[in-house]
Image (tube, rainbow, N blue to C red; front, side, top):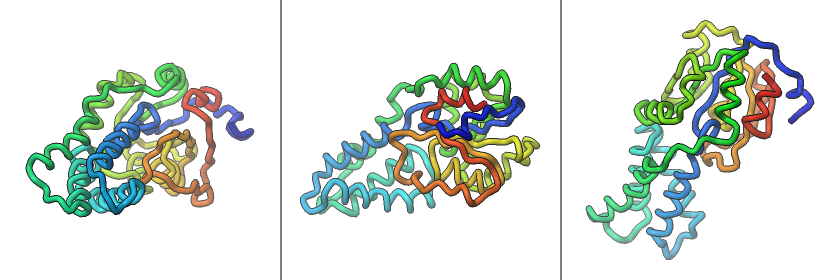
Length: 239
């Protein structure tokens, strides 16, 4: 933790908190599905890394068209198979490939270390709002199953996290920017756009952040403070 992060922030802050890979594991399940897909494809010309890069390209386009969520991911796997395989996509292959994606939904919620007790502690002194992006049905279901909803005064499921989204959240709840923080693991969705919107941000790294969420931290794009902590539990030392 940096020296700046050790300076405890005064009570009464507004903490916008990310969900996937900040409060609970998420990307590891998608990574397992991708590994199963690559093994099943067993491409004879492309390496596993090349197949993965091809899938990322398909995902980027698919997200623009269909948004986030398991349905969108399943469609990306199918389209990647169609693009790379010399074998025609039969109904049986289609079902198998989609099954790699839908197996993700069968995993129980895996809350990250120290999350419940940290949220309980922070909620005593600050106002907590959960801000997560993705399919509203999927994300709302995960919030309910997590057992963490009680710590938040509101839950926002948004289609995308950009500066305009954070500005909208601030305006909706009447939050003062000088005491509003975005906390999360994604430079691309949690940290940089929040700073751009004039908020403060706390980066909580995750060992397996989704490739499409990785980016360089850009503290220069806003006037807010950017802090980094080693783990979610260390937030109790900041707030």
